[in-house]
Image (cartoon, rainbow, N blue to C red; front, side, top):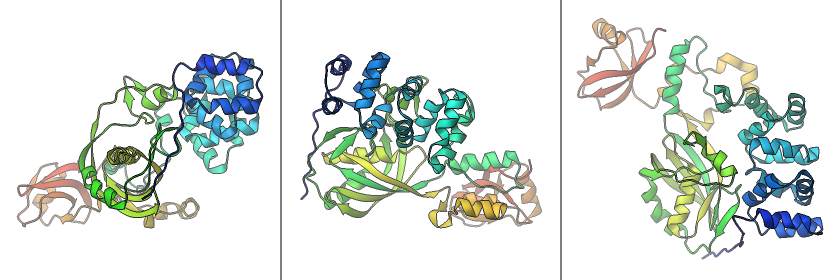
Length: 398
């Protein structure tokens, strides 16, 4: 039975004056760094915002880059952009590469155009492309909310068809393989966050397997503070970066399958999760840890199924650039998890194309169906209930 205890007695709240006093005292950078280990990163960030420029510069120069990156998670973008000007270029780039891309983009938007371009040019290739896309939109433009994920659709599809298909695809089930680390809770609910608490792990694999059914089916989940969920017009992560926390109402989500795949260490496990849109896997890991009495957080995450597509069907960016549209999948492939129904009579074909329900005489199971017309054209996604097929979304025409 494994036991872990990495307790840190972090000071929290109302510590800005104490931290400022460290800078005023004639301490070496090493001593300042050692003293700062007693404070939470959010308190150090708050102190930085209240210091004058000289004090802040001394503080920044005393902090190791890894620690500094953690502190920047709690600094407002406008302030963080100003702070970057007091940091040497290598450190500034390191910080931007360590924090979340959307947070880095928020900071870079606050820099003057020439400074922003120069800083982006120093980032690593993959991150640079992502940041360039995100910062090309102003914060109040819809493009600033884009994700790097995408769905490929047929080039002959109309805009109306594409938007209808994507809205359904986004609502589909998703599957992940995630790492669960027991014995540690963090402010972000994953291992990249600041440690809030540690506990001995007094449970084993059998205890975890016995617990998992409690987190299967429709469950109530409180979204994490580090998330894009909006409450009162503010994104939760913006509040969290300022060191704040507010009450969040629980939301219903569905975990269709929750399987323990492996135990990779004394307190480390690998889970497979098939869940609904809106499910936070890191919150699931956190809640499992709480239920076991030792705390927990997510140590890794990999999406293995999205919109019905698996990793085996994924293609590299190089292949996309080489083969282009030849790789595009037909529209109905987004709904291939549902069975197909082929219309056999012209009258029924006409009813369906006019948006009318029609009777199905075959003894088929109730549920969602891909409906095809007489010529094999994909017409709509429909629900069969009580022997009647009713269209949910039409994909023919404009």
